[in-house]
Image (cartoon, rainbow, N blue to C red; front, side):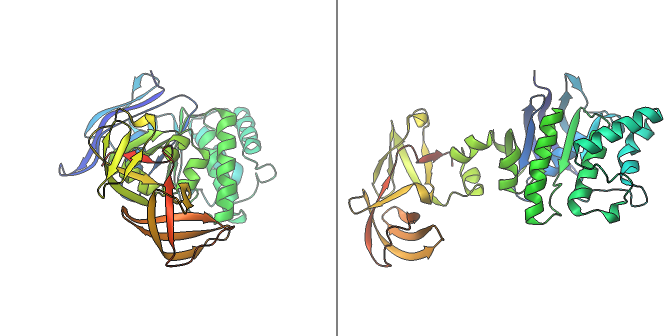
Length: 343
């Protein structure tokens, strides 16, 4: 059995507006799992169910084989880091980190030792006597992380913890979070709307849409093999066309036949196909003929909008060969690069 499990979780407000719909997800001990999706998809609500801030309408929440669905938030052994850090401005760094331990009435020598160890783990040596106003944004974020971790939680919950930082500091902090999480081996749930941030640190990712999980897999599998049109569009695929499939051949609405990978041998029905711009090859003898409508310089390459019989496609070419607007070209699709999606 998995270390953390949400089983058929429903959340609705006033019995009408459904926020989560039979949501199920399982996490292994020591994993960092991210909930990713657009605003309003239900990721923060899911985190609040886990934290105990929201009681689900139905379903069960389990941690280490214990049902915590009705356990109040203050009795859950979890650590949480908020978007706003929520540090006490009148307390020093060490006093902020020690706060949870003092609430538990731990002995002073135990508190001092744990706080010192956690400040060191979070790269805060030498900052113990400073106040939050004397710290940078990244330092305040590490204090919030240290405060959540020092109580040795069963589960660490991170709610958009990097959204208040500038772009350069966000990159540094996400590496820091992953380093600390791996060092301590703590099971972590990370909520974000930033795909790059999420994919860079997660062991697995749940992509959410309107209260359901559209795909739950490793970042690599989601990036390479999205399963639905929503997931593909969300992670950056731009070329889409309807197809019908027979065996390992698909036919577009215009009658063009394309071969696809054996991984789709069991997929049936009317489907959507997609392919990334960089996975389309340009050649004079290409199977699909097209005419260039727009050329855009991307720095290391050119991108072309090409009008074809299967629709308008975005295609990336290298910087060694530049094609002109209005020029007729041919396009080839590798069967391993064509992705078939459930509509």
